[in-house]
Length: 521
Ligand SMILES: Nc1nc2c(c(=O)[nH]1)N[C@H]1C(S)=C(S)[C@@H](COP(=O)(O)O)O[C@H]1N2
Ligand SMILES: [Mo]
View 1: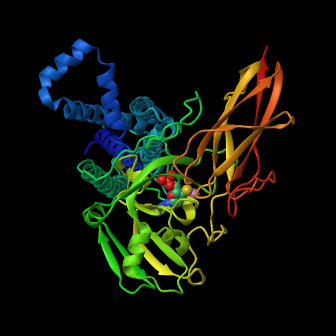
View 2: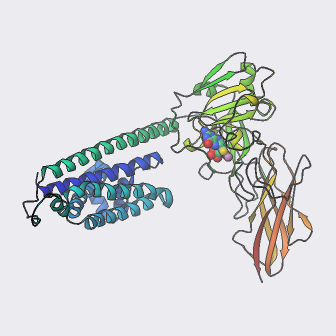
């Protein structure tokens, strides 16, 4: 093989390795398509209408794959050229790949809109390109070849002749070995990426085909004050905060899902997804929040959940009287410990199958998760749930308790100001609004204080029960200039939110939320 060809082959392998790595990262991050299909979409979107139509007409229904393969073929050609250039001078070849990466980045951002996660695959791809390019073209480098004449060489080093791209067998061997390794690694990465991508698509499809016996829930009358910039009563699935330790979202086919309930029980029970659909479905508004939520933070959301009451299932299995906890485990091995009492009392602790009328999104625990009103997520809301063990708190440590968080995580009474947003208002009457929560206790009262004046009662919106947040609003009178507003809530147990500031570790932040704004005259 002529040395020039070897440069082209090095470029091809480099191009392939980067694309495969980028696609694997994209599918690990559960993005649709990798950077190359994004570039195909970019080209499609940039092509003027009539031309696009002609193109589509020409290639018929195959337009999408054709375009995608076209993009890949173009990429491979350019990569080969980059390899040939790099053989002479690494930086010229690297520059070619850098330009390709910029095009990929534009495509990715155009495709998803979410910059940070869209760019990660491209970033990984370009790093792989630059490293592999160096790795493969180094043994082809003209100067390296001449130097390789070795320390034993006597006399002037012969300069490499064109056409006689000094084909030292040692260099050829090094190149072939490196090329082989790179191809092997690329194949391995490709298989992993494929596997994840496929299982994600399969499970998404199974999810789309479900017809669950659930409703989407109706906003209770008067619960949503519909104030601009105030979070809506219902948090949509797309806007719901997400917290978990899963790098790649677990993909469980509902047909394969099983939940084992065991431990200190009279009769073990294993449930299928169909069993849950056939059981009595309970639906309720429940506000879920994270223990890591700082004062004023947004790791909280309110949704209409549909599922089976855990209390009913625990009654069926017969819980031993000396048990006090349930150890929950997810398919990826995350665990949490929940007080048995919270799962057996009158509250709607649910094995949820739907969120806002839709099967759980994969990110939120599909096919089945737990939701328990009144407890932080880290001690109750296991996503991708597969195992419930009735036990005692003195017999286990769960994921976050091993890491210094409290064993028990009842939600702390909190309130948050959301309006005025952006630190600006018009002097005169100013609407201050926000949310407050004390799940499973209920909010009794919300007060607001402007610049250290008297506390002023806020008006509370309607709520369907005690397990959700409540919206509140109050009008304060602001003179032109800078102001600070503070909020505090009182819950139905009579507890008034403490001003004492505490961080989220080990059992949830405390303190009053305040904001500053400038009133313009
Ligand atoms: N399997 C699993 N379930 C989990 C977690 C996790 O890391 N893994 N995190 C918990 C935490 S800390 C919270 S606050 C909630 C968040 O649920 P969400 O992502 O649906 O909002 O899920 C809980 N369930
Ligand atoms: Mo959390």
